Image (cartoon, rainbow, N blue to C red; front, side, top):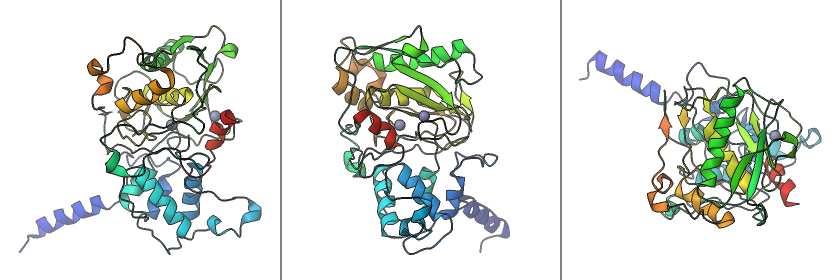
Length: 362
Ligand SMILES: [Zn+2]
Ligand SMILES: [Zn+2]
């Protein structure tokens, strides 16, 4: 017979483990625009649950579904709370890209991944995918990097890019701090390729234009406040690099607190897009689409290095065997922790964010 105390403890453990609250989201942070998706945990084919239509729009945004979504299309089956075939297919594809069990239903691990803060660039762009979709089978070959459709890159006669931070689209961090963060982030990519980066004297003349924006800022990809999407960048040779001004950006290079997002980590990721890399399914890669709040991940992984060197060649001074980028990536974590994200790449449908990339391809 178990004692009443033992039963009480058992019940506590059970309640804790099924509460559905991702452990990267402290209980005082309910401001993620995707937090309501936690209410969909357990949903599966055939269900009709309020909020599924919002999940469909999320999946569309990141390239997993493709449907017209206007007021005049209210009869479209996709724009309803029905858990139908196309939603099940989209979830399975998402699960494969993020190395999750492809159940096609909204199990807890899938929902926990969906609500994690992430890059605004779609995983699947214009119906072409290069992200992993077979999970562990690819885990060892370390070549899951991807490019944007058409593999755009900076021209071969341009091996030095200039960058500048917008003089007006800023956050409160001081100028010297911001400049050193972005300089370090660019240096990570310069260390492994023949591409170099220098700060432009004039913002208007820079190849890469960095700015912090709130909400709708004119490129069709509105930011969504705290958490949710964190940043997005355009493929070569557009050069636009936008960050969500509403985030609690950690800028001092130490481990961020839970609820904070490490600016340098996100900068290194977005520069990968600016150079032509899409998302990777390698969880340790910089180009993995999600980052956990309260963590810092700034070292290029072997997958990132292999991808970018294919576009720009290797830095002659780069020695893979002695570089930390050739070793397993360590993700530092602060405060509450959770499993890392998974990766995805370019696939089948044109998500809203893909419009950013499409501009460059046209
Ligand atoms: Zn990204
Ligand atoms: Zn933007």
